[in-house]
Length: 389
Image (cartoon, rainbow, N blue to C red; front, top):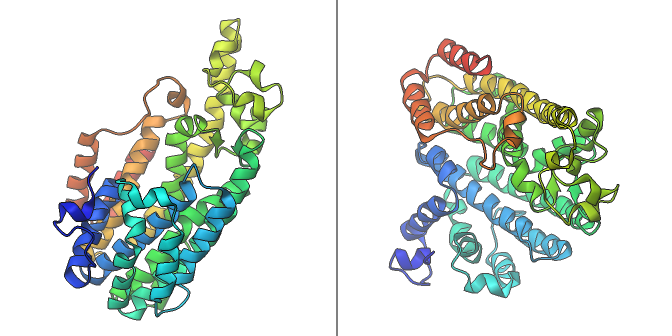
């Protein structure tokens, strides 16, 4: 993929002002088409603050996700990135220290994620153009997320050295999802309140009861959708305690040949055969399929509970704030339609293709919510129709 700055006809020139904002808008489209749809429905300072927040968190996520970097190196790099946001000045020396510490290969890569990281000096100063009521929450969430990501990077490396990265408990899952998504819900409440006087202290307090669930709903939905892809890199976010309830010694036993695991995650990592292939009788295979569907169904039900809260959160946004409501409604209804498609969880293992909604479904969601965004009654009725479908 060609360099974003080259596409803009700017080469590696130092960008400021309007050109820097243009870069931020262009790179958003390359690092996330899904979130670009939601972010670009917003306008003004709210649009700019959420755009920048997304880009900063994408930089942190790029560091955390790098498969070549050691966890200790990720920890150092994430701390350098967090250091930029610990002070309102957003010091140039802290930005330069982060960019200089990036892996050498990133400076040569054409991948948009790496392009964004090495242009931290372009996107970070833009935050200083926003009022403090918008900028402060963005700084805070970036620092908090960097700390959480560093913590889980260290845990993941230690676990993968023994074979697989797994989570022991539902509490562990909630903690992981909080750091990568739940705190985004907290950020949104602060930014939504900054954007309108219609969200007074009392309404904001009500929204804060549900805002973490807004992020968790989308994150757990993604974990359900992506669990098979995650297994291919020896990662499983399905808590072990849920798997044991349904007769699996380890979460990875849902994905790999039991003969290879023999109680050892290291052995289980060697092969990625469909687990159902290891059964001699149809009855054994059916039992296995039912048990792992039951495991996934628990996560589906967990997603629905978070979605319930997220819908309640969205209805607390004043209904005159059309763009803000649409920003929330689009991903929530898409997640709900995905959970409806996945049903009891069995479909996840029945096809090599990931279960996901069609473009036509996305278009329908956009069209209908734009007509009815203001109506709490319609939102509740439409959501329940999907939930109970």
